[in-house]
Length: 91
Image 1 (cartoon, helix red, strand yellow):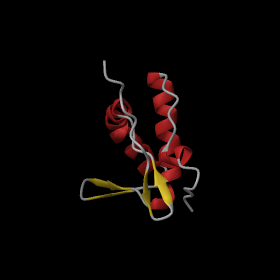
Image 2 (cartoon, one colour; image 1 turned 90 degrees about the vertical axis):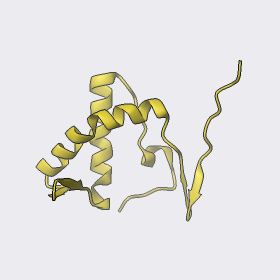
Image 3 (cartoon, one colour; image 1 turned 135 degrees about the vertical axis):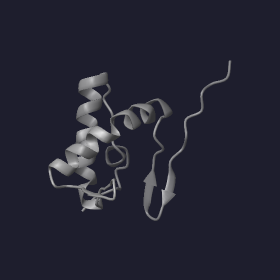
Image 4 (cartoon, rainbow, N blue to C red; image 1 turned 30 degrees about the vertical axis):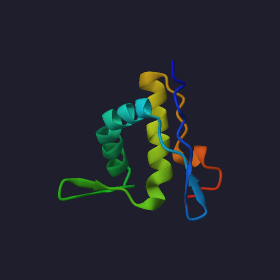
C-alpha cells in the first residue's frame, strides 16, 4: 500500500503557502455562500453584479468565520492559511 504524499509548501515571494487538504476544500466550498453573506452583512465584503468581492483586509475575518462554521457544523479544527504560514501577516 502506498503512503499518501503530503503536499509540500511552495514559496510566493517571502511567504510559504501550504496547500489545503482536499477533504477540507469540499467543506470550504459548501460554506462559501454562507461565509460571503456574513461578510457582506458585516460590511467586510461587497456584492457587485452578483459576485462577492472580499478585500484583502477582510481575509482575517473571513478565515475566522470559516473556522467557526467548520468547527460548529463539522467538528473540524481547521487552520487557516495564516495559521499554517507563520510568515504570513494580513495588514
